[in-house]
Amino acid sequence: MNKRISFLLLSSLFLIASSSLSFASDHTAHETSALSDTAVQVEASVGHFEIEDDFGDTDGQSINATGSFAFNLLRAHIQLDSMLRYEDGDGSVTTWGLGGHYGLRDENRGHVALNTSFNRLNASDNLNSKFYRIGAEGEYFFDRLTIGGAIGALHVIINDEDGRDSGELHYYKGAVRYYIRDNLKIEGSFGRVKAEGEDGEIDYTHLLAEYGFADRPITLFTRWNGLFIDDGDGDEVDTHQFLVGFKMNFGGARNETIKTNDRRYFSDRCLFENVAAIC
Image 1 (cartoon, rainbow, N blue to C red):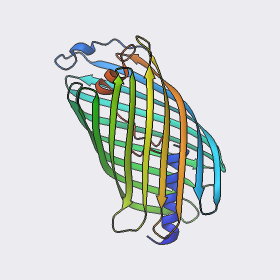
Image 2: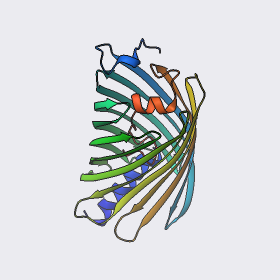
Image 3: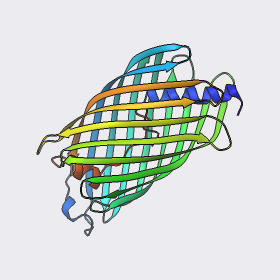
Image 4: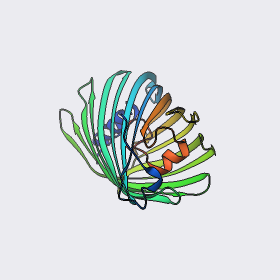
């Protein structure tokens, strides 16, 4: 991978990362019953980002929307995700994506799953890209602490005037969540993307605080994301993103706590809806 291809790939990853009902349910018995347990979560946020590189600093704003549908049957778990993001900074970027998780979940112990996603990025400077990702994830639940991790492969096709293909990239991530109360959570993560045998890497991280209202379907959150790109040839780009937003829960998740919904229904979406969501 020469310097030009590396720069285009890292730039495209940066763009997609920084551009980043009601159902009947019987969730109390879903792990031993043939009755399905379903939930929906929608999220909306607004953000401000700052980009620091060797050519100067820039900033901009973003609007983000995501949705997830979770389905539990016995201990099997399926989660389907979607996202849409619009960013206005030095040019505009629109990103959309679809993904899913397929695995086993026990809200008292943890979960393991395979996950996959597809994203499409359209930028105003005609840099358009497709992102394909497949991976695995797992979490273990203590009383008020959750620890987890994810690994996988990422493939990027950059549709510019030359047509670029990243080849296979690999990523890994570790995450920690702590529930101060069942409706008050703090969490953080750190991950890295790297091409095997090549110089350059992308580090991504985040910190989040989320608060929920008792017996209400809404929660509020604030989040900081960091994205740190090193192309291996001395060029670096640092991005800081600040988000505020809310989540609305429906179905089995409607009036449950943040802790219950995290452990019973919803995994990280891994849809590039922010700069720390490669997975």
